[in-house]
Length: 285
Image 1 (tube, rainbow, N blue to C red):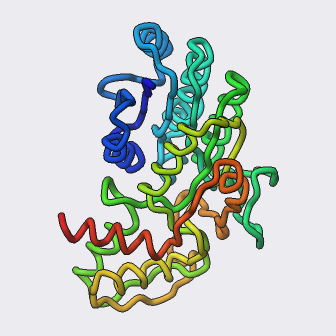
Image 2: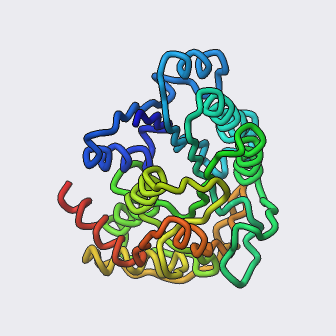
C-alpha cells in the first residue's frame, strides 16, 4: 500500500513516521508545506496524478487556536480548503482518506462524553475552520474517515507536557486551570489507532472520536506530569477567567470512544499509562 501523510513535521505526523518502520510492506510518503502545499489545488492535483496513492492521512492543521482569531484566512485555507482538496483528489484516484479533526467543533458545555451524533457548535475561529474542513471532506468524498481527537501531546513538537516540564524546572509554583476537563491523548496512541483503521478489512467511512481513556482537568494533567517526572513544582488550581485568551476554550472536551473501539476493535490506553511512556521517552532524549 502506498500512503501519503501530510503534516509530517507535526506531533501526529512524527509519531506516524516512527510507527511506519513496523510496516515494511507499505510505502509511506511524508510531506509538509516545504514539499507539498496542500492549499494549492494545482500542486495537489499534479502530486496525486504522479503517485498511485491508495491511502491519504491528513495530519496537517493550523492549530494556533488564539492566532486563528486574527488570522482566519490562513486557518481557513489549511483547516477547510486543504482537506477539501485532499478529499477531492483521493476520490479521483480511488484512495481511502483519513482526516484528523478536533473536539473544538463542540461548544464544550456538555456533561456527558460527546458522541459523534451530538450537535456541533464551535466557539472560535479554529473550531469553525476545522468543522468546515470536516464538512468539505464529506461533501467531496463520502468514503472519508474523520477522527476527532483532543488534548494531543507527544515527545515531538510543542505541547502541554513539554511546556509544563520546562516551566516546572524554572519555577517553584505554577497556576493551572482546573475548570476545563478532557482526556490527555498521546499522539503515538492516536497514530497507532489510525494505522489500525487503515489496515482494517472493514474501512467504514464516517466520523469517529479518539482520545485516551479517563478524564482529567489541566490541573490534574500538570500534577501527573510532575509526579511522573519527579519535578518538584507545586501546582495551584486556578479558574480559566484568570487566564484570558483571544479564543474561548471548551470547558468540557471528553469524547465518547465507543464507536471507534467497536468498529475497529481498538484497545485504548488509559491517559496516565501513556503519559508515563511519553515522559520516559523525553527523559531518554
